[in-house]
Image (cartoon, rainbow, N blue to C red; front, side, top):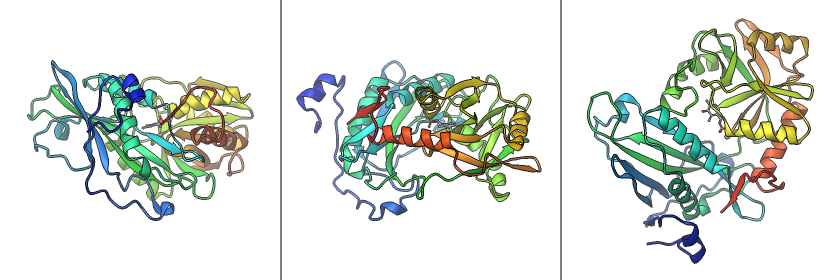
Length: 368
Ligand SMILES: *Cc1c(COP(=O)(O)O)cnc(C)c1O
């Protein structure tokens, strides 16, 4: 059934994506205040296969369900697995919009290239993403600050234990309605500077959203949590001196009206929120620059009060102000420990654009 092939769609759509509707749709969550993150999934998913020699084939939308997988499937052993995270937002007028989705798919192709996986057919993937969200449009929550989280994923599917690139892959997209990250306005987090373990190394896979990066970060995250911190700040993998990023956010530091963030160096994930915030900050009249940031200096600046704000940037929280920073046995409060002026301004501006309350002057929004 080609339910979305209206005349206009068909003109823009390179490939017609067949849809098999779920005959047993689930009940939508009753309480949008209790959604949390990534716990429930919608009625449909998008799938597309890759076969060496044929490329990406068989794009389709089908009822959400489990996969049958051989225990020797290569992804389960050697971890060729990459993912993305983006969101669909409901506007006040009820309309739906995506934020820079093509940038997520382009980043996924760069992750794929590094992992020896095939680059995406980004055009078909984007069309699939849009049609999937339209199919499950009723799942996009309404409550303030909620959204539909979109998780594109690619895994290797060859069966066998030889260590080499798979010849077949599965690309899929699943959707999850998620709650407001901040239920009562922005809230500062406490961050622990990790000086034992590292997340990424020069020449490694730090710039990719590959599954292994997150597996490797879990232990340090657990230890920091036990010490009472909510996130780990990673340092560079060579000298363990320079700030890289936190769990799933890039880091920014403000000195008055000047914002600095670590320069992309191959081991930092090039966040789409990071890029958007750098552009918006300049448009709002702040200075924004990329540099190599020594953690000892940042810490000293926080103590002396020169550092006025610190915040993380990422799709999930958008802006996450840092109230406390801990390095070894020392703790320091950033600014007054509350929400900084720049953090709040950037949060209000970017979420305003994402939810359609503010004009989108950068062409980031895709209306559905
Ligand atoms: C996803 C992610 C980010 C943030 O990227 P966005 O595109 O802004 O969501 C930052 N760091 C890491 C390690 C990530 O996985």
